[in-house]
Length: 372
Image 1 (cartoon, rainbow, N blue to C red):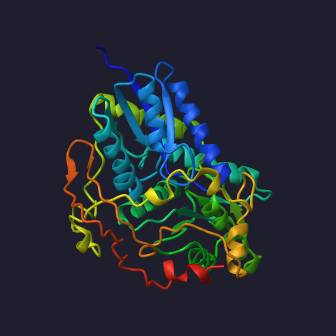
Image 2: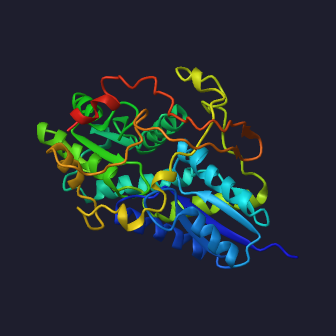
């Protein structure tokens, strides 16, 4: 019997309808790159279809081998723990179908080109002509409790800084780690540059991207002598689709190896030594496939940040957070990174997030509510 390949694109999911729509557009772009294969997509949480729904559709179309790629910028908890957990669980239920897992988008020259295009678009749209040497670039990452993923955002910053020749560049994060956007921009404003470009290094829209833009507006209002530009996020830039298509080819070529040299679960990374060998588990089952029930009703496709304003005013709106220690769950699964990085996992159902070692940093997670 000949092998029939199928492609599964695994996303995080969002309460924001615009983010879900944009991920579907990315999947459509990959469908064009692999016209001979069935291509499906699914999400870890909130949105439908969930990942196992997409896998079901591939199985119903007769696929005997599925190439699954994470629609993630870097390998943090979602790419290392949550998606493999879902895939492994499905594989155990359907041994007749082989699932091969690819790596994240990572630091890649094509991703840098996509990022550079978004930054250049912001420069080209600006009314004034400020020299690059008088410009500071602020790259904003999502933020993770995995220091390796955070350091990759800083590497993207350096590649853009040196590539453009900006006078200065800084990195900050939307949550979990430090510095957050508010403290990062306040520090940047003190350095004396005429223009600050705020660039969210994100794939799609959503409340975190809007939080970045809103905070940039607030800091800009305090510093009217500085020109603040807001660059667009990556979205379905052709170079992003090229990179993801290459991740699919890597699986077929046997070159699919996640970079685990600085993985906090494998090596004693400074400050995270206690997490070596820790069980890597998914904690998304409680919000899997909520669909319309989880959709934010305060915005249409473009997030306005209305939910954050509602919470700040004392109203109630469920904003799911991945702040370390914010919640605990009871799920445990095994997984493997590529071909050479496997971890043993217990089935102790008392899973709690390991405490982030710098949760009390003055410019980090605990300052989140003070940021605006």
